[in-house]
Image (tube, rainbow, N blue to C red):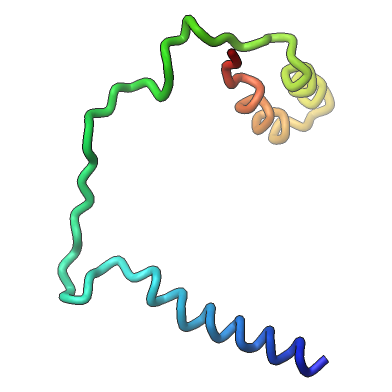
Length: 88
């Protein structure tokens, strides 16, 4: 029991001390660093739409419809985003 308590206390102390140090948004000199993005945004996140398709009757799509009918709209919306991902 004491060993578990010591382990938990050590982990909590490590998290409390390490988290603020790792999450600092300013550099040591106090100046904010600029983040640069290389390359240009193209507006599409993947290959052309012609090579992939979305199965409108996939098991996930059927589950979305079932959950909507049951009133589980939040669950259905979450699964809908997955079911609409294109497949090869």
